[in-house]
Image (cartoon, rainbow, N blue to C red):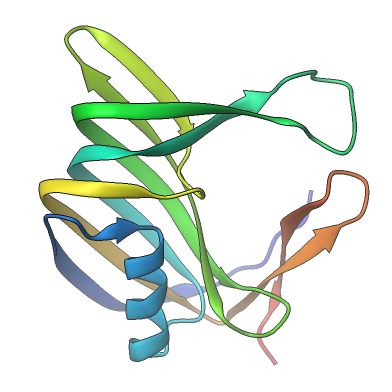
Length: 150
């Protein structure tokens, strides 16, 4: 386990509009507001996009993802963490559960999903922690490395 202790900073309440692309629009907002590390929670309608819902083979590396298309309006609840990539740009790692007509799609939203009608987001900034997403050569995924801020 890798961990670092921080404290709550600013809190942002954000309304997403129809067609806003998640996670890109929230990464752009984090860059604009100079948010380095933050907890993100959201409820939203999702109209289209793709969700990564696991590796095709659990024991094979690098990971070959299962990609599930989102078709039609879905209800979504999601949570994630903003941390910087190796170039210092904010990156949001966010997973969600999307439901439509009693069926649920769950997984990582990194490939992008579009807001349908509206999204409501709370971003809670975490101060005193430096979170970096460093490319893991085994999995070929950028994994979080939290440390105390300098």
